[in-house]
Length: 387
Image (cartoon, rainbow, N blue to C red):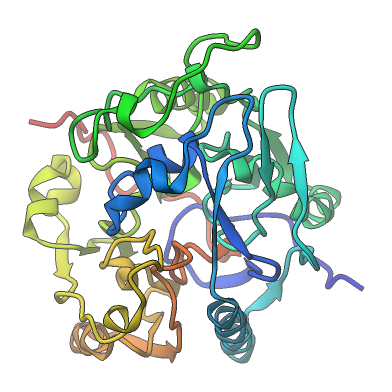
């Protein structure tokens, strides 16, 4: 039986955490390597996966698949259980999505895919005040992922929460704006995947992940790197109206930004490096900055050449704040824990062995549905224009 829920209430990344959804990695057996995957993970460490040895994908073809080592999946889920237990011990009510028991294949009129479990639940939904908002996915295999969260969303709706869903994309080959990727950090797109026309084409579609947004009370910053993101940010601004102020960052990164910048409390940001600080708008450049140490290769060096690393080496800065003074961090990155403790934080260390293989850290694994406190205005009428 589900634990009872409160009405959703979350405006930032640091207020005292009361309720959270922690993802599940059960039945995560493989990556579907299709056009959408290649675009999203264009800067993957092993660039060889782009080439014909691993297949290409069209709108009418099944994607090639990269199997995941079963031991890694089992250890991922062991670490997730330890993470959920640590949050419970800290007094946080933990909810879990429906867990896949076996892989699920699905198809739309335009393509087919293997369903991804609801592991990185931060990516596909965001809580803005009392509203749960589902975003429009960018990777085809994630189109039905939030179905595993619907039971919980209905519980929150029954408790008085608002609930909205960004229009679902059709995701034909022509839906994707490839301009950020093509010929820049990867081979030109025509060398990566054959682009096929479809009767369902409707031009670029709105697609964005919630992990491209950072909540700062009344203000939300949104990373916009292509036409898909721009359409989604426009929709978000119209949908929210005057309830929040939306500020777009132009190509701050390719997509997610929570391994680049993460607010720890009002006035303090955890940043990847000083170069990131220079790219921030002035209101955030004026906050204090804490820099993550250079990542260690202690874990990554043990992987085989054909293990696909899909997350940044800086993924361990993807910490979860329980309040303004307490964070959960990866016990396997003690250098970061030392930096946080020297800054006055109480750190709850939790093991996370395979964060780069599954594309997420503790912030990614969670959707913080209820935090104490209300909507604050930290910036007043300060201009967010990048100077």
